[in-house]
Image 1 (cartoon, rainbow, N blue to C red):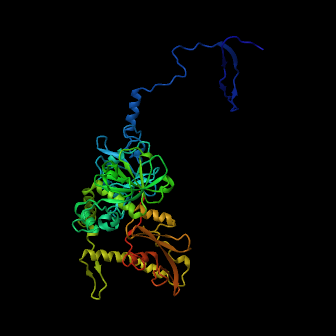
Image 2 (cartoon, rainbow, N blue to C red):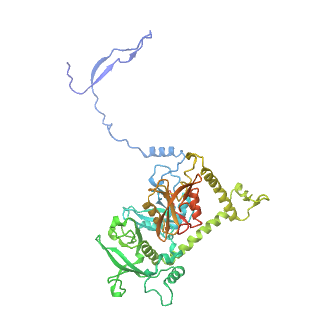
Length: 529
């Protein structure tokens, strides 16, 4: 064995391959092993050092990539316009006065949109109606939702959305929800229902011989104000879980409570809150979250407070009518005449929409078509009245459904040939939701007379349930399938009135009350953004 001292390097000589002339396999040539001293490391070489990319190389890469066509970014909210590596073509220029806002639908999916700094809730709703391709533009609203606290309120049409978002806590889970709200201005249409006489304060002006209903009509319709409201409410005591029954008064100057029963003497009145500095919210699941004595809970919350439970003034009414009266009165006392202007604009919006439909230019192929009526014996005639033409178009569109439903209800047809999904494509059908979920959906979209939905019965097989709102309460009616003459029908009155499908049942009760307390008017729908 040979010992080698120091640093040495093995060097092979003559290790190249040699190929014979006879086409044989190449042979490895002879090699000689020598040991030579290893050269010292050059001082100019730095090992294991990062290579610095110069600015010239970066510019070259950018110049090379600039020849590639720009691709719009489908997810603008995931990267900033200034530092994004993706070439964004769909974003507004940095100089534009636009802000990115995220709005959620009722299916928990969201949509990001660019809005101006002064965009109101009405304008944002109009944008969402256009982008979501909603069938109508009425009664849509933005809901301010606090999931952790269980709070929600409907933004007024004139409120600036970005100013509302500026009051939210950065670490909170507050979000905006886009959905229907039929009860936003319902107290202007039916003030007596929303403001019962027993809750109108005795200090109201009754010296003129006016009844309470006349006083409400005059205040709401003429001046957009509300009379003073009074009633007993359960209030949650500060820093405690106990609730106490107290008599409250709501006046133009603020919210007061009585320290002695229902006394209104100034020495017994205690100032609670200023209406200009707070917002009123309804509380969902209040029994579980706050131990409320009933489900009819609402609260007042300072406009710029953090999302903390001890900042809330929780109040609980004895029924839904009392809670609705209080929340409506809060809105009227705070915004006054502005709410009446919003209501008038909401009534003009459908008329403006119809006017734009008639004035908008139509394609040349569509403009050359005319509505004809061939029902008479003397041949066809041109329908001049636009409303008659629209009615004829609707009748023709539904004719296929009637013919198909009648054909499939005939006997001697297999069950597989019968259509079972005619109602599943309708907005008012909500599948297998429970009774409690149906009531929650109707409450969220506003407890107005005539709002309805149809769902599958969970207790009776092959049956359906019609859930209907009437006088701030939700009623449920069982729809039973039956057979007569070998044909299948649906009925709600033990066979006195028969319907070939659920769509015909809904169309009938939109015109006739039948056994219902009110006609079907507003379908409870859920929109997906």
